[in-house]
Image 1: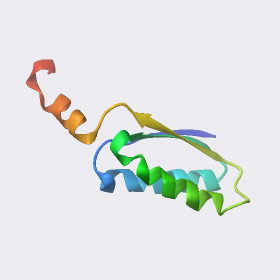
Image 2: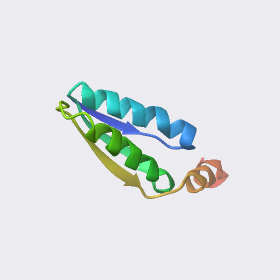
Image 3: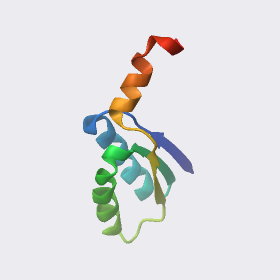
Image 4: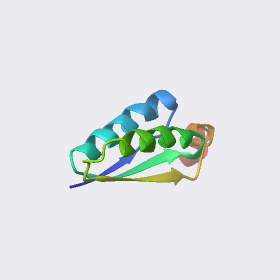
Length: 82
């Protein structure tokens, strides 16, 4: 099975998705996880924890979203695009 996880927000918004990605991987899923560039440092701990479980058969691909949390909030808060 494949899973696509995308999170935008603060560290508190991203950490549950990182934990979910780890659990899905342990269950044998292939996960694509998208994080904001200012939260990519959290993925290092995810990869470290996953490498310690040698019996896992799934995989997690971590991708960087091309914006920060503030970029996102400025965009959605602008009345110019509805």
